[in-house]
Figure 1 (cartoon, rainbow, N blue to C red):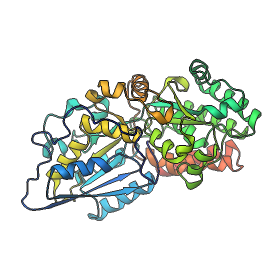
Figure 2: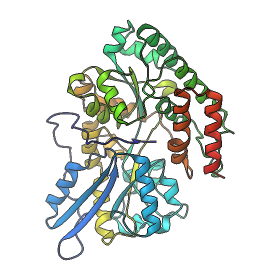
Figure 3: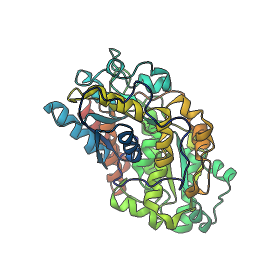
Figure 4: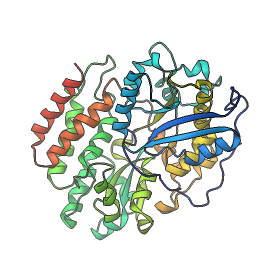
Amino acid sequence: MRRILTSAAALALLAGATACGGSSETPSGQGQPSASGPIELTIATFTEFGYEDLIKEYEAAHPGMKITHRKTGQGGPYHQDMLTKLSAGSGLADVQALEEGHISTFIDKADKFNDLSEIGPKDLQSRWLPWKYDAGKAKDGKLIGYGTDIGPLAMCVRTDLLQAANMPTEPAKLKEMLATWDSYFAAGDQYTKATGKAWFDSSSQIFNAMVNQLDTGYINRDDSLAIESNPKIKESWDKVTAAAKRGQTAKLTAFSNEWNSGFKQGAFATKTCPSWMLGVIKQQAGPENAGKWAVVEAFPEGGGNWGGSYLTVPKQSKHPKEAAELAAWLTAPEQQLKAFKTTGNFPSQVKAMESSELLSFTNEYFGATKVGELFANQAKKVTKAQYKGPRDGQIQENVTSPALAAVEQGASPEDGWKQAVDGAKKLVR
């Protein structure tokens, strides 16, 4: 999954960042109201998309247009609410964000969304990485979503906590420590033995990253359940639950109030870190911890993608053309570069990924690290997107995460695994 939850707006990653290259004005033929009189649009998102300032910019360029931003903290409840309103036939925003782990559920209901290739600006396909664009299409070729970001994986570490445990913090040594999951968990044993504190925030966050690296996740391409038939999922389960039983987990539910506070309190020393996580860390760790967190250009087993979203226009919208134009503008390379500077959401657009502006972008909070270049390098390690079949996101949020939490609270890994398998079977029959 991508951002899964966070309840407050992320602060700018770089104070006084210069404006992105290219025009910030609306491209020709995009975003111009087609109806007379004031137009009111709504856009619904979850967690941090970095759209607050962009929406103001769009309104300023379109006098008479008013855009209301409905922002939700938790991804799971957001998508469930969206399903409810989709079935009811009313209540959805003109532009609705969809997380990549949930999009397959809505692609099955493509008739309830506008085809953006028909109502939106033309000739936009080359804007995105091919696999990102294709994942926004239904089986009949209907384009229901414009891609926003992707989530190339790195690892974030608290260097001051590692130093206190007499562990190395040099980049080369950190990369060696993060070479494999075995080396990562071995380092966790060293840390917990030296400090008596947790190595990572939650078993679920680690397990989700491990599963997202696999060629096949919870669902096979024929939409059958893979949780039992894919032995690598069970192997990942065994490794993370064993580490949890050895005291490496802080037992914090991701994006809960306790998890948020954990960043400030140094409750864990490492964090799985897709690019969008940078804004979350800065927001929750606060200015008092600036420079203590570092982003390492490495991830166990090489890398992976965790996250990414899409902007859709439901047929409930009374202004579908204007909504599509807004969605197209928000996902243009220039705007995605600005969103990256605000939240760390890494662009899925080819032009943005190749820009010198992104590659040279540094983040002072993380020790002036060139995070643009770092995540671009991590993104190159991703050659394809894992297939996310129907109910993939629900398996992660409503099945495996609670089962892992049960193990953290005392259940055996075997009982937790049975809970996960049984729960997944109930969802995917």
